[in-house]
Image 1 (cartoon, rainbow, N blue to C red):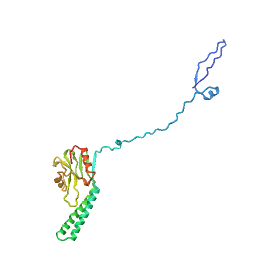
Image 2: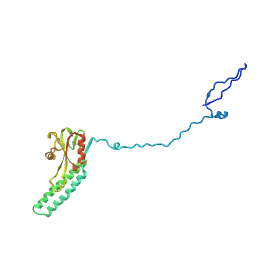
Image 3: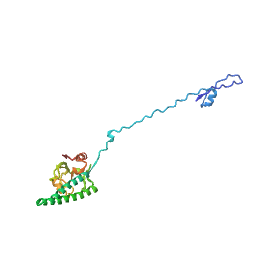
Image 4: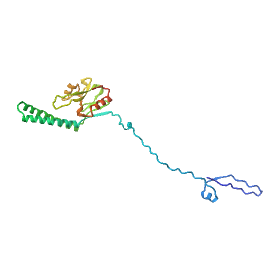
Length: 237
């Protein structure tokens, strides 16, 4: 906005002096201002954009950590299954050699070994392979309890302890002891109904809810840690 010069009112016929009219602010007109020689106000400076500042969000290790798991699936270990089958092959071939080349009592022992280990290899290989393909989850642990394959869920309240132990089979080709995790109940009546094959486990461990750590994944330490995290059942190692 520019200020115009004041205009003078003409003298009247009575000879009165001229008087100055009040100043009025009119809208700025650049062309007229240049014609009248009026100075124009300086234009405001145009802001120059500066360099853009980028802020990178640093992700801490806590942000990368997954939330605490509330369920653990214990699956059959396919690598362990294949290894056990491969162990049976040389044993079976050894008994075949004894049955063919030996005589007398040794030949009978070789024939018996061929029958036993042949049956174990055929049944274990077929049934184990079908189990891994069709029912890969051996057990599931969650906040309620534990669920074994082919059994109903068992609440944590029924268990007296979870026991971790070792067992050495009385077999010549088993060089290392096996490790087991047994979910021992407070009363035998609280256990799910045991099948014919599981009754031997009940006599040996006091429960039919047993995991052999060499045949499942994750490891035994991870399973015991999940038990301690999800329940108040004592863990005995």
